[in-house]
Structure formats: structure tokens, C-alpha cells
Amino acid sequence: DARVTQTPRHKVTEMGQEVTMRCQPILGHNTVFWYRQTMMQGLELLAYFRNRAPLDDSGMPKDRFSAEMPDATLATLKIQPSEPRDSAVYFCASGADRVDRDGYTFGSGTRLTVV
Amino acid sequence: TQLLEQSPQFLSIQEGENLTVYCNSSSVFSSLQWYRQEPGEGPVLLVTVVTGGEVKKLKRLTFQFGDARKDSSLHITAAQTGDTGLYLCAGRYNQGGKLIFGQGTELSVKP
Image (cartoon, rainbow over all chains, first blue to last red; front, top):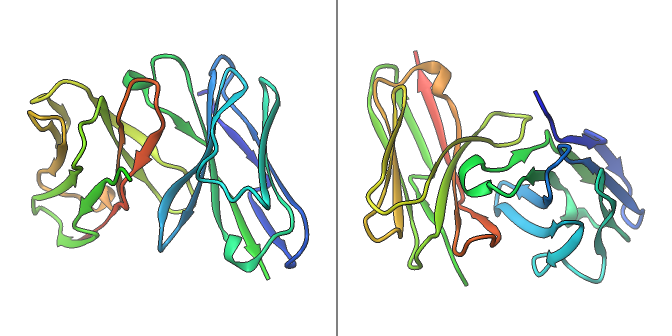
């Protein structure tokens, strides 16, 4: 089965440190999403890309978060500097053109803890 | 702000019971999806509905899209312990647009 791969699975870091999360979308998928999941807020959309171009990052705190797709096989989400309130599970999802039929495939997430 | 309201937030039932989860919005969806998420994993797609009034069945799960395409429901018949998990609805307000998730329904089915 094709999978979305996220690394690392777990990350514990100190406040103020830079955090980089990586995502390898499914080969051939041209849309990539970054979501953040917490108990209080549920799944929040942070950013999404189509054909590697950023389409919407309005859900992302711009002062500390950045999302990029350096190539079609890699999406990154960076937090600098990290804060305790950034603690959450971060999911990457990818999809092809027929997303209304086939939906998105999610990775297993990166559980981030900022202490 | 486009909101997707899901209810109930928590549901604890006995094996064999039936249940319904609701997903509502004040805006019209171009499509709506239901996902199921297990602990430590990402959401997994169950179904997509596109046409108003559409009904889809997946074994004991029945999904309905409202005629006006503003609401949807998930009905589970004779729930089993394996149905335990977080059920999420997610809607798109225009084709190719971003996918917005509801808060989710945490279902616990007890033996």
C-alpha cells in the first residue's frame, strides 16, 4: 500500500529550539496538506500546496512557522522558535486530482512536545 | 468563518446498539468526507459524498448527505467493539478548496 511517511514520529524539544518535521507524500500525489491536532482544537489546517506551490497558509502563525516543498517528494514544516503551546500532533496528508472521490491519505503524524 | 459542527462529541454505548453522528454547517459543501482515526495514527478515509440526498453504505455504516448539502450523518448499526475510535467529518466548500474538519466524535463501544 502507498503511504505518506512522516519523520520523526516523536520529538521532544526545549522552548526556543528549532523544530523541523518532514513529510514524503505518495508518489504522484500533487496536493499536500499540513494539519495540527490537539484535544482542544481538533484538526486545524496549517498550510496546503498544489503542484508544490503554496495555496493557503492562513492557518499558520507566520512569525514562527514556515512550510515548504523543495521538491515533489518532500514537504517540510519548521517552527522557530518553538513554544510550549506548539505541543500537538502534526499530520501531513497528500492527495491526487480526484480528491473529491479518493480523499486524502494521512501520515501517522509527528507528536511534538515542547518543554 | 466556515465552521463544521459535529455532534455528539463523545459517545459510549454497548455492543449491539445503534448510533448516529451528525455533521452540520451553515454553508453548502461541494463534497463531504468521513474519516476514522485510531490512537497514534492519522485519519483514514471511510467515504466521500458529493450529491445532495446521496446515501452510501459501507457494511454496517450508512452515510447520508443532506438534500441541501449542508449536513451529513453517519449511522452505525449493531456497533462492535472494533468500531471504537474517533470519527471525523471533513468538508470542502468549493472544488479544489481546502478540507475543513469537524471536532470529531469519540466513540467507545463496550463489550
